[in-house]
Image 1 (cartoon, rainbow, N blue to C red):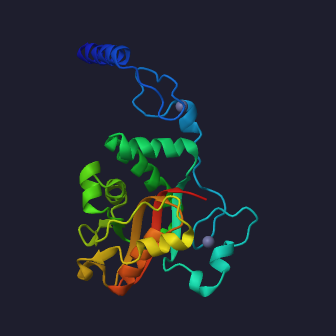
Image 2: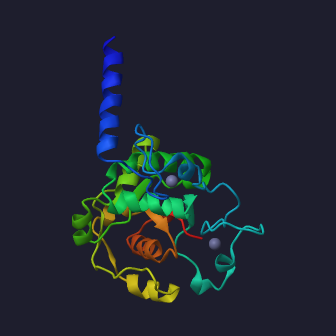
Image 3: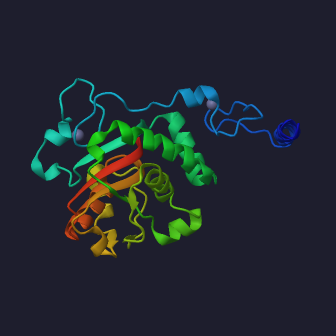
Length: 248
Ligand SMILES: [Zn+2]
Ligand SMILES: [Zn+2]
């Protein structure tokens, strides 16, 4: 009896909240069902695209015509990445973009939990990541983190570390330069923009270890590759990158 009363009360309060503050899907703006707490409607949620097909063994870009490596990773040595491999849970499609936007900029900090669980599911499908037991979230510049109130990559890393019993390296690297946004820059400009942006503050935590860098979105990999270079200079045994989203 008590439980029924509680559930009914929960539903009524939810309904009243919905009437007073109707909520809409973060992507298509359709009204959400009053019991739905997700920022996406069911149709948009179903449109998320987990990466399950063939992808480049190194950088993780989806491969359309088969083979093992993408054009860039087969290319000239100087263009090659410092990172050993990259894996991501989803393609960065418009629905996921809206979801990540809600997570980062509209105060939906609690989305770290379901998104981190999605990453844990992908982690299980990528046995090549299992050699990298030490997680490291890409740090934000301190002013930026203060403004946002959290580091989204760190929240995702925390969920993954808890779920898969991995070790999270905290406060071991800092961003020493507030780099302008990478948006709109060419690949070369992005590399120039990010150069020297990271400082390893606790090299003893990094030395000799294989590190899995966690980030929300992988685009040109300029940022994570620069971090991998700083880690290698401090004696890391190798680095891989694992992100929530991959921008093809
Ligand atoms: Zn929708
Ligand atoms: Zn590649």
